[in-house]
Amino acid sequence: MSGSWHPGRVANEFRGRVFATMESMVWSTMMISMMLAGIASQYYDPRLIAAVAGVLSSMTAVFWGLGALDRPIAATRGGRRASGGRGSAWGTHHLACRTK
Image 1 (spheres, rainbow, N blue to C red):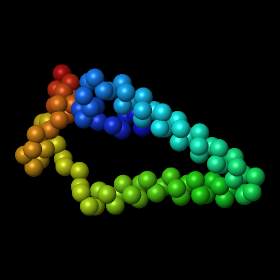
Image 2: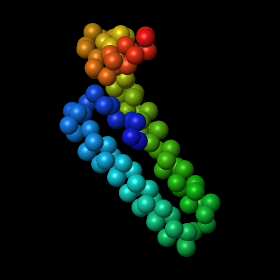
Image 3: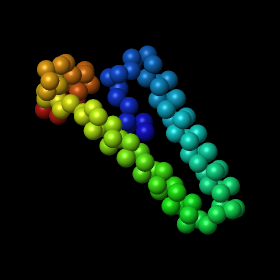
Image 4: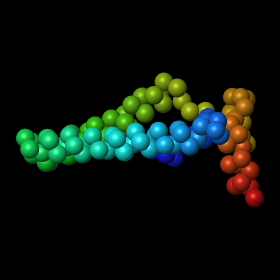
């Protein structure tokens, strides 16, 4: 998850706090998930728990796809959006690094 947030959207003085918050959320979610799976394993078959976990994990892709249908991601070219809008500083720097 730490690679999914866009560094150009967070001011430099807040990047460490944002990273720490996101990592804390990831670890907390994992711990709660394992605790619930442990409790559920006392009452349900492990295969059923794995199937439910797989369906819930796949829902991320479903919601991401539905969101992409509603608002497609703009393609960038040379640090600028295809629509003529200005791209982020990160995108421009990334492209500059690739050409060197």
